[in-house]
Image (cartoon, rainbow, N blue to C red):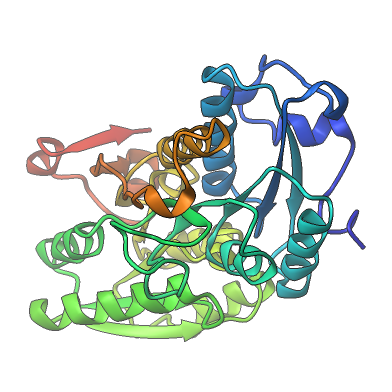
Length: 325
């Protein structure tokens, strides 16, 4: 079962994916490591993978010899729980939880082993920490939610003349529900209409997107792990129907979305790693380290995607945006 959750050979676990940012990192076996860090990641997709790369690089840059026991739940809550229980049973020195579901499962499994999370939208609302400033307990981390990201995205849509926005999300992901509520609140002030479609798995994303055709002028794909893992299904419909696809992070723009106010997940992973270093070296307890959110928020546009979705990039937009092809 654990093999099905994504746990592989020592070499593949140490590499933690194929991103260039982690290539060349020193491979440390479990027997020669000073610390064993258990990694639980909800699903494999570019944003979460970037966060993992940043976390590992941060640990290496601090001169810490760590072995990473990496496990992927493949978007399955039962796998999430099994992975957390397995890491606790193995008595790892620290757990790195990459996503809200992963962090919740880890915290349910242990109140003793330190937990550092990232890619979590609202750790307070999710019940992970008491407050951002004083998390308390055995957990801290970084969020993937900048307070201005959703309002700025919707304001830009309004500027483009969009009035009806399609949003696809997974109700079982707390981070997604929070973002949907934030979007509704911002949209109300802008007189934008939000049209929702829900999914339970990545296989349902294409059908959910198709159900919104005719009712929406654009799609807005938030940082929902299940939907982002099947992003290409939405992009295909956006291209066929001339419906621009907005995203919640830059990695999805590089994959073919039109635009996003976002940040690099590598950065929040790296900062989470810095918090882990403080814990492993005994400098601070997890509950003493404040939770932080992304510091850099920029507008990224994909010129090729814009053409494929019937959008002409205006000169005025280029003053405040980075354009990629």
